[in-house]
Image (cartoon, rainbow, N blue to C red; front, top):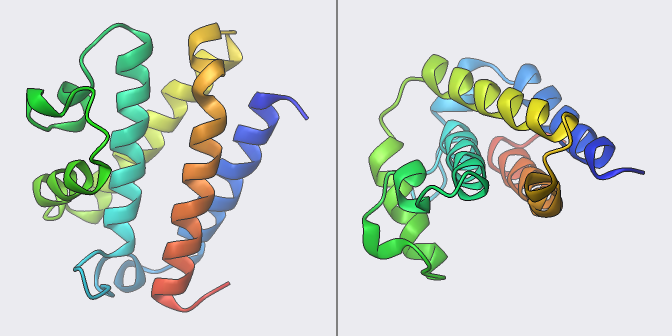
Length: 142
């Protein structure tokens, strides 16, 4: 299977889950750290925006909405906490629009053969699947 096909399959699984859930499941059920499904989705979108920024030669922190000092950092817990703090109050429709628009941009560029993007795309397949699993566990669906 090609990288793009694998990416498409992971997106389809995540998107199908999101479409099965109602607004309460997406925005109101929270884990002990305070994350709702929508926070996972915004997290995925922000990191995908960071991928696009990276392949365009832009600083990662700008796409993530974090401090410049986080560029090059591998303290992902701290970076993810900063993303969560900055985006947790976003409304569900905005989160879904951001997620879908970011994915559409990534998908179009990958389909056009953006070599730098295609090189890093497998990590985003895993990211989609990882967060899909956490969302399923959070809301109690499979």
